[in-house]
Image (cartoon, rainbow, N blue to C red; front, side, top):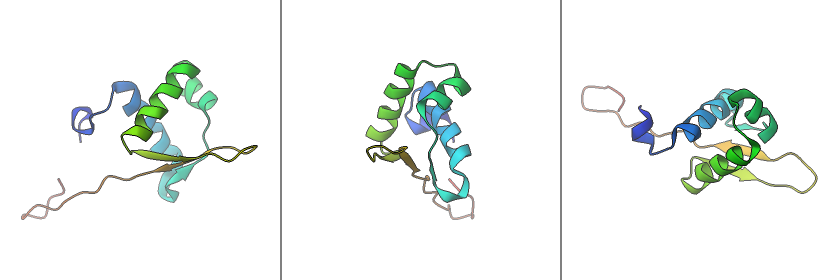
Length: 88
């Protein structure tokens, strides 16, 4: 799957990749903006913008609970199988 097929900016693709790595098979992560900033070299403001982009495009859902860390739920892409059994 290419970046173009995801309709995401390159920054959003980077952040989504990191979120996937933190979430693993659980499908959620508590990773914060500060950690994402250190991993990517992006500013906190950019991280906030990118996270909003991912939420708006329904790639992630974030649960905000006052006084606790936010939980980011990752929506895994659905793959369709072609007639020859290949994932597309």
